[in-house]
Every structure is written in C-alpha cells, then in structure tokens.
Length: 84
Image (cartoon, rainbow, N blue to C red):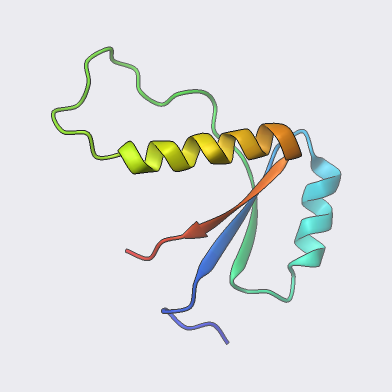
C-alpha cells in the first residue's frame, strides 16, 4: 500500500508511441506509485510577450526542458511528482 509520504512518479509517453504506452501500462500495473500518461502538452503555454512580475518557474523550466528532450529522443520520460 502506498502512503502519502511515498514518492510518486509519472511515466510520460509520446502520443506517437502507442505500443510503448500499452507496454508501460502493463509493466507498471502492479506499481501504484507509477502512473502512465500520454504527453498532452502542445507547445509553450505562455501567450503574452511580457514576463511575469516574479519568475517562479525557473527550476521548473529546466526540468521541463530535460523531460522534453527525453520524450523527443526516447519517446518517454520518468518524472518524480513532488508533493505539495
């Protein structure tokens, strides 16, 4: 059984990798701490040219670029979900 303090992970799969997604769902079926999802992001989310008043996502942006690179190169990425 998984507790609130246990680490959780997302295994993110490119939508172009349907067979990898299906395999991962089966492979991680007995691992409740790992959720397999398709990457649904489409481009950059910011729509304005003005920066926000305070940059809150600097570290998040670095992690996102690493995840993007892994998904492009390997078709998937494993990401640890930080608890709030």
